[in-house]
Length: 172
Image (cartoon, rainbow, N blue to C red; front, side, top):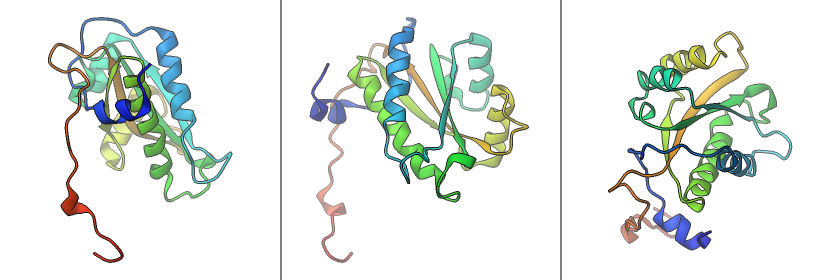
């Protein structure tokens, strides 16, 4: 395991994966990390997850989000609006869960990519149909996190994004 300050600094969007399966234990660790995210209110965390490893389903998801096609596993983050405390800001809770998952992937020596789905209604509907929630109104696809071992040249590594000019004190 890497130290947290290393993990957060080397995490990058991995868009190409090696032809190697991700074991179920690591997938479960990533899901647990997502569920440890802070939510709008304790006990009102809206997240649910659909783990996809089936190649045909990955290809279908890839028709909507092309980076999904070559991943060994994709996790669709689904918001259960009935469990959300603030019904209009569920996406913030889901974003926290997503980031935890991305960081845990790095911690496990894997790579991951956040593929945005919400708030585009057309994409949300299409993804919902593929994963079987299209007729459940309280469930909304938020994003797809692809996970795998980074392909050569796509390793997690430090990329300095710090820009002091974007920091403002007291007022803009």
